Image 1 (cartoon, rainbow, N blue to C red):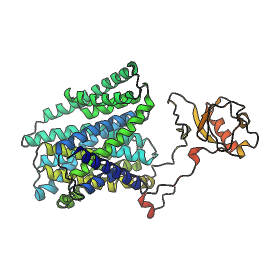
Image 2 (image 1 turned 45 degrees about the vertical axis):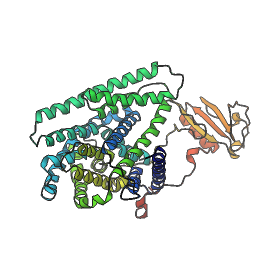
Image 3 (image 1 turned 180 degrees about the vertical axis):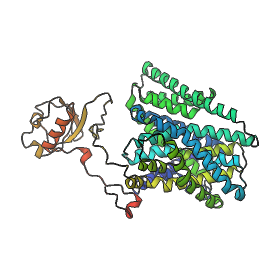
Image 4 (image 1 turned 90 degrees about the horizontal axis):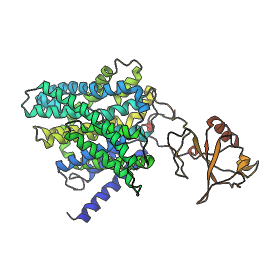
Length: 515
């Protein structure tokens, strides 16, 4: 194919996916599900794009997942996850193991007689789907802006970011056992598990510290290269840990945690850069996986796929959650039920299934189709109903009225170390009734008026500056309560107060989610 044709196809796929994601967000449909759908629509059973390069799909998935995990760690505050380290790590290790074993045993009784899959093959299939998908969880929880009680959100994000390594080790172990003909060497398997996790954790921490040191010490004239330097560092962590016989997925997530919770230059621009990289990685990964599958082949696994999805959603996932969280009394029954429901499958199980296909294992194509179908069911059933379940179970609460809001007109953000709160105020006629000078607003002490936007022009004001209706004023204050009282007294309109069209999820047709 000519490069121009390839670029035309790729740009069309990306454009169609972005439009589908924008349209789907209005109805509460996960964008990742729509990315998969666009890939399937343009695939060989749809508009005719033929793609069956397993190695290329595996490479794209691995690179994308590496960037997603690093970005997930970069955006996670250690202060948020400290209270949930115990339950999060337990869910990410013991929970994955319980899910894999329980699901594998159930699958053996379901598939052995109908599809001829061995016990080891069933355990391998279950292992590919044993972890929750970080891309799906991060995207849905953060994209929907769900505000959950009892530290549920950091618990779920820690679990999804940290449980891929455990699932990956189980997949590698059972691939080895299947290739050996089912003669298990459990001692070597356990040793490999412990070694991979230990080396991955240490390597991730050390490399993360080294990345922070390099970024702060190196002097690059072009500041736009700093985020690229961090991206290159994340790929280095992933690759280097692999050659150290450690778990690359765990290492890159921990490195992201270390970097994200350290002080380094151009921190804000780096985070914004990785936000874009994460969406690009998710879009590329899900599009590729959608192109790889042939929907016509899913018919033969429709019944077993739906049964397996039912088993994982309603049996083995709740079983693993309740057993893993049993020692942690702070989680209520409703909390555990919601955590059970957020057992989202996504790209990671499909990538693991591609690994099985690349290894040439028996029934690998059958496993791939089953995993793909189960992922679709999970995103449709669980992904679209998360807000509804949170509302039903009473674990959601209204978004916090945070005072540290990003400026919409000034594009200014302040480091987290600065405890002052910033506000962007729209000047109205009523606010100028006692005088049109800035000093007439009688702002509280320890408040600084930073900048005014008038039309398309910006300038730094003084106390004698004449304000006009429609001006935008940015202020910074150390006295939050006094600032709130002043804003209420003068009837200030903040950009975040402006009403926006509400995005109604699909279930609002049947249920009132106005609370």
